[in-house]
Image (cartoon, rainbow, N blue to C red; front, side, top):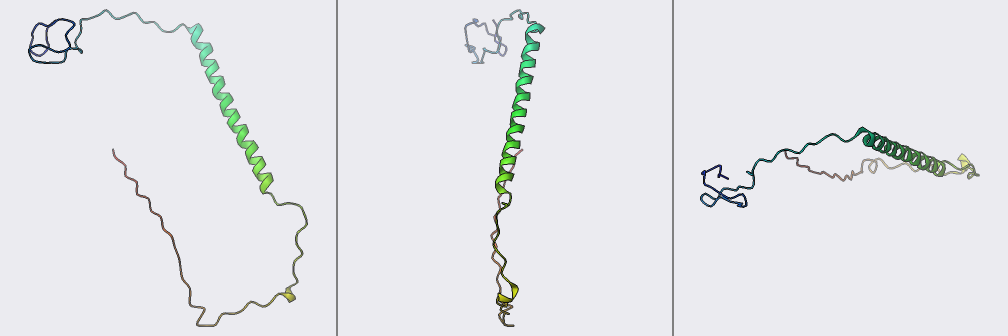
Length: 122
């Protein structure tokens, strides 16, 4: 076997060239490629059908689970048909207090702003 860089003679068991130190594992003696044939169709078709069936059952199960959860949540959050509290008559309620003119202008805004910085690299 010859080193592809310096053309020194090396043995097939060498990993590196003795003269220049070039890595020789990439360059091996040529080997006849093995005959590879496709998998027999008799084995592939049932496996593909079984895999498709499993995927379909998984999707159907997820859909059914979501429908059940949606029904349970809508039933739990629906207003109850029980008795409601009687409404208080309007004449018994106190009149809303009107703010004075100078107090009406006193107000404050309180805000919370959260900013997230995302850096994307190509």
